[in-house]
Image (tube, rainbow, N blue to C red):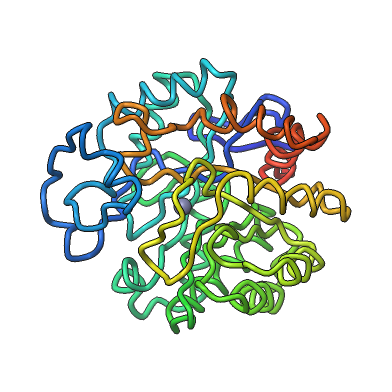
Length: 340
Ligand SMILES: [Zn+2]
């Protein structure tokens, strides 16, 4: 494969990525806006399972990852399990820390590919204010080519771009700018869709309108967005990337919408059905860790779950080796690679 992948410590060949997680958070603060200013309260191991199950949205600091020593240890467990690279998608509005990501990569040897952009209106709307699409496009290109905000740490892809349902006017501006920046740079574009079955289709329409490439766009969080096989197949037919990134969450409870989340077995069933329908090259998986109780230090599954448990589950379900390789190595490399 020709081209390069841009990590927070420099550009590498796509073959150098190894086993790759496509959607994670290492340093972030996704606390509800009312909890942003509250210091993190300690979590006792006795309470960890309840917070994991309920998502602990009322516990100050549960949705905040800010301890570099802890996260370095979690990344080392991923590397020990054979992991090579992590895509980190903490964007403006949920406390991105590009310098911290570079320190983590240097300390652990795990390659980190940083995203760039803005999260949903509720978190990032005020940061966008009246910036027009041209200004926002310039910010994206600068993040990718010179450094994120005031750092020299460069992003390796665009996103996760936060979209609500219905889309807010500011979110549409960001999405249009993201598509234009994709057109200009060839970077992959990953999008957090609104919680509605029609949301991914509306988003891809806007991306195409602005000259973006739906084939280089990834729709994340399908775990909580599309529940009917017909809708999944219809989205697959657009050619976009299809991401199940809640691996490891095995409780059905979801605090942000009246739905039941699937478990890992159900995620794998729909992925296998898509592969058998000819969509192997579009499929992506990850954990989207953004809470403390999903970390190993609090008894959670951690960043190694897909490697230490997921691959065995895939084999038990009859996944061929070339599908497992596609999910964890080949597809991430193909989406992340750019040409000079
Ligand atoms: Zn995410």
